[in-house]
Image 1 (tube, rainbow, N blue to C red):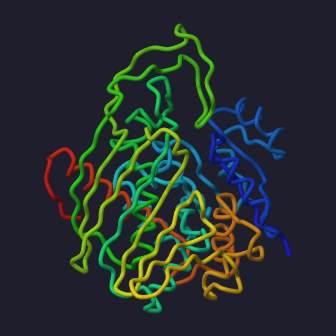
Image 2: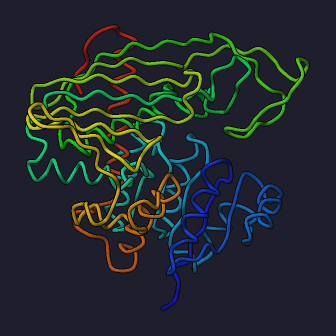
Length: 380
C-alpha cells in the first residue's frame, strides 16, 4: 500500500516533534518541510532527514502532498490553514487554530464545505489514562461530577530574561498562558467530563511587566547564555499567571490555575475530578498512573496496562504494562486516528480533536480574557 505523503511547515520546538511522531506510523511518509525562508528550511532538512520546499506556496503546489501539518507561530495558522484547505490538502494545525474566533469559524466552515479531514493538535487527550477516565465516566463509574480542580504549570518564562515570540500579542494573540497551555487544560476538562463550561471568572497577573528581549532569535525552551548587551527591555501585556473559576452546565463548579512562572514545574498539567462515586487524580508528569479515591473503601492507583484498561483506552497503548509511554506517544496516537480518516474517509463523529474543538477553545479563551479585563463573571 502506498504511503500518505505529508509536509510540515514550521520547524521550531513542535514541528520536529510532529515529524518524529509521523515517522512512527508505517503508512505515512514525511515528504518535505517548509519554514520562513528557503535558507532556514534547507538548513534544517539535513538534520531532519527530509527534503525542503523553497516556500509554503511551493509546498501547496505539490500534488502528491495529501496532508499539511501547520507548526508555525499562532498568527500564521489561519492564513496557512485556509490556503492548505483551498489547495485540497487535509490539515493538522497546532493550537490555537487562529488568533480570532471569526477566523476559526471561517476555517471550520471551509473544512466542512470541502469535506477535508481537519484536526487540532490537542495531543494531551491521547495519554491512555485520559481516555480511560473519559470511558469510566461514560460508563457511570465516576458518577455525577461534583467539582473539577485543574492546573497547568511551567517555569520556562520564570526569569525576566526568558523571552519567546509567544510574549508578543502581534504573533500569539491577546492571551498567552491561557491560550498556550490553558487551552490544553480546558480541552481535557470538557473532554473527560462531557460537561460544558458555561460561565467563567478570571484574574490575570503579569508578573514581569517588562522583559529583556534577546537581540537575536532564541528557540522555544532553549537555554540561553547571553550577555547584558545582548538584550533590550520591552513591555509585556500578556499574562504570566491566571486564576479561573468556572461553572458547568450541570450546575457545579471548578477552578483552574495556569502559570508559566512556577519554578521547578517544567510542564505539569494536573486534574482532580470529583464525582458521586469516586475521585480521579492525574498528572502529566506521571502520566502512566491515575489515582482513584473512595470514601468507604481503600483508594487505588491504576497503572497504564492494556490488561487493566477499558477497550477504548487500550487502543492508545502500544506497549505492555510497566513499559512507560509518554509525551511523544500522544502525537503518534492522535495522528494514527487522523490518518485512518484520511485513508478511509472522514468519519461522521471523529474521535480526534477537529477544527470545531479548536474553535471551542478560542471562544472559551476569549471569554476568560473578557472576564479578566472586566473583573466579572462572563457567560460562555
